Length: 306
Image 1 (cartoon, rainbow, N blue to C red):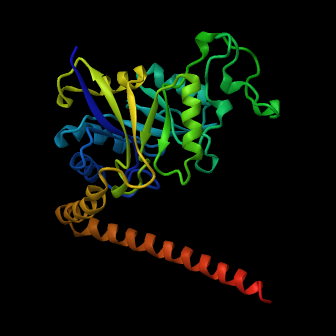
Image 2: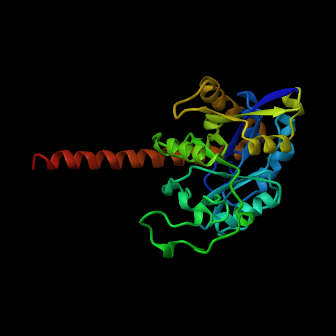
Image 3: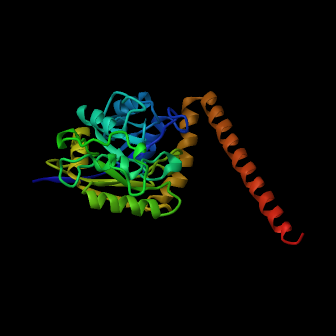
């Protein structure tokens, strides 16, 4: 049987997200230039720009796949392959079920990192040891307060909607500990692992990505969004990336700057001016933080001699 490998970055934020910076056209252009076959725009709790990116992806030679990063009661969750916004604030298990019922895949992003709204291990729905007990995600962790768990009653196995994959490599984690823990958890539970950049700026798109083996296709041009979703479910995934720039580094940093300038030259001065203002504001904030940190360190040093 024929088979082709495609590279996707399944976790990227655009200017449609409250913390994103780039328009989807520029993200798609950059993704195509650095050799990706697909990029999934997963803005926070909004799906408009992701749907638009999926509609125009073919113009850039990319596979169009919509998605969103939804805020659940227990942490963030990637809904990939859905064209509607999942309900916010529901339990992890309920949100996973909603996504899967609509043909999408549910992926756990940056798990266990609470500072970035990562889900706790006990809240990830998994079958119990007898496949008929309560989901492991709903069972109290050792030493935890049972009052923290929403439903202590056992559930039938049919009611447990497991996640489809775990983000075992997120390029924005500052140390490798959480990534290693996510990798161990995915291996223990038999979940496919994916890698993603979690990019909020253009130059980081594709810094980590997932390679998928798609069966029954001769070339990447023949691969559809449904093929990608099926490959994630089957677990034919390979993670690529590291917290330092990967093999596309030169194209990332040099190419991104050039493409950004060219894009804003094409789309008009007004948009370029807004981008410049945003960049200046970000640089000012970074400089302010650095200055405050320097003052703090200096005061601590002087206190030693006081």
